[in-house]
Image (cartoon, rainbow, N blue to C red; front, side, top):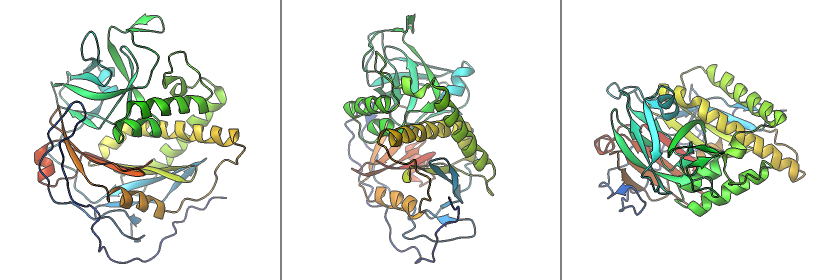
Length: 377
């Protein structure tokens, strides 16, 4: 039987800076320009479990709330002491922008290019696209490679990775895509999005798409990840829905307004995702939570196939701190996107992190990144 109490202890005061040196090298990935100059670290990571009135300290600015347990998933709301930027405006998600006919996603040309797409923002609000955002159509289904901001009235190329290895045609399931895509309200499962965001490897993405489809019992002709994401099995759909609703209900009952969340599946902490404005989390909560539910479903299926019991225990909050601490030890690489954002990556073998700044000026002034994530591979 689960217990929801945090195993917290009085720790030392913050003493160790784990942000490392902001080593900014020229990035060789497509769509990225020369790296901006280094700036000093902005915050420190809590070296031990330090209990506060609001929860457990994650960094100088971030605090973990009480855990929410649903099936084989544990979620912690993340609170922030940073003020919400007054001059930032309100972001909109790519899927919501497309529903309002305020955005287009298309191939970069008639001949196409596997690892680049074009996004056009026709609206008056900036669009925040999260790494792992799945877009269906074009010559093959893709995932967006990185967190990316497209300003009002702007058009920009964006890095992408294929999640449908067996198709390279503007015909999808017998219908013409005309080279256009539709963004979905879920992300690629974690192993797939990590392959693009932190490893920058198309082969790694394809390998994990294949693994996910295999665990999900899918064998689509074109190998698309959508076979697993768009589940038609009644039992699996009900499980995913139950998990999504349980997490959503728990997040709605938090004592404070969360700026993000951390989550674990099958007892393993997978990711911490935080924004500088709680309204961004509200826009993306459906996408993030539905993706967690898919990962939990696949975790349960794998356990059954391996003859193992489905996880139903507690997760030590120390494991969340460990992901952040270990990721921050990696050397940072700052990359300027074609839209003028700056993505600061700390990519490692086992742990990685990302911070997206709207501009180089925001980064230089040490403002809170628009989006941040820490990941365990």
